[in-house]
Length: 206
Image (tube, rainbow, N blue to C red; front, side):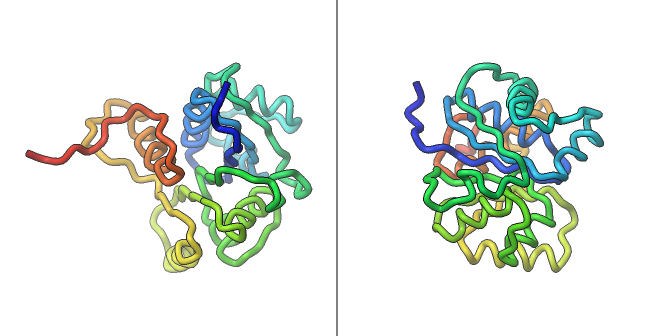
């Protein structure tokens, strides 16, 4: 059984790079975390565009879908939420969590969070983490950043949000795309004091 009694919210927005979400889910479920997953409406379109895959709209189908994509059929606990269900448990500050990760995070999501707007469950859940002073980690996947993007990210950073751009390192001698992705995920989970990814960390020079 898991010792991680509080759930972690995993938000997936409509940015390119769904492999980041899939592998984050893989490592967290394998480590027996309880995950409350909410994907934005745009995520359905991104799956279709990037992988030619149709993500199910029903929540039971979504759980099976995400587990299959992550290759973790049984471990951990996964609860999926509809993007429009702003009455879900994760929409309330009284629902206690370890925090929330939005990966990948679109610039539209960044802008709405910076402006205090909540037009769907993902944005509402993230807004709750900010107002409750809980950990919120955003992994923006965009390039280049415009001045507007940078100002919105700065606003969120000033509010205590951790910003971890999807920028991999090379000192661990990556051999595959997954090596690059996993480095970003490991640094993302570091912000929540979660260490469940076997990566080579920097040990200094001699």
